Image 1 (cartoon, rainbow, N blue to C red):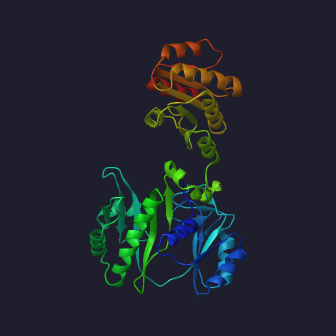
Image 2 (image 1 turned 135 degrees about the vertical axis):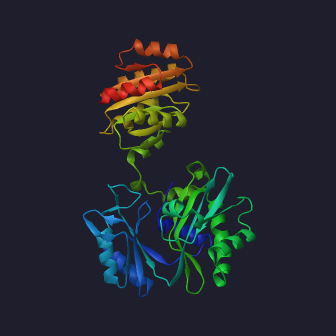
Length: 394
């Protein structure tokens, strides 16, 4: 689950991670009032969307309007907010369609001496969270990793004990952070690592992490993703979820217990198992097609879930055909066949449907489909299925 920058900073403040004062605005007048409330001579108006690269992002139909604007008066704050609110902002992470800006964050300015990068993710090979820092703050970390990977410094840490003092000293030395800033780093690095563990995050990123002229480390950004599987431990975090930022079909699938990601192709995929779903998408691409989605119905899919899965697939106007690729293990092929027949009777199939079944009770499942009134194209293996759905769509 993702949250907005202003929400992340509220949590940071509660966890003892230094942030600047700021206020959320939904209208241009509220943005002007927020500037006055901050009481300083400079502030920053930031678009609040679930995507990075806002500083370099531009508004559709107005390329001069950036997603992050420095303002020096209430009127400038009003104008910046008016240029962003209810507009589509396109960044490197949104795609050309952009995301609608429904609120802005008006944050106090500060005297910046240095900009750094900080991120925490799970290192699967080390089986631990890893703190990553770089001297190249304000730059997309992907660019740094590609062109100057030697400028990214990493320290895995034990979630039970947090970041050790010697690890902080190592990172400060590599970043050339000393004096008051090093003292601030000791508190900042340990606090953000503890925050990552306490809130069951899967990613926490601050870009830029700044050092002020008086040596204080401050989070100038907050991009946080929580592990959905751990949200039962944090019911209060569910209140922070912004449904308007999420693809409606993905929300619908989540409510039905399905793992679904919408893509921009025209071949719908209904598969059981994440690995098989990825392979199915790959082989569709290999044979010249374009998958419209990733969809894993799971090992225990029932008729209701399969029916809902078809409803979601067929609600996409770009979907011109569906490939069902099932390897029966926990879910028997007869169960899937029954679900397909019931789904056909409930919603009807208006596009070509290719079905490949394999595994437990496969012969019985194939017989059930053959004797039904469902108009399907049978496939013997995954390659045959991919070729047939690509041909059917074309």
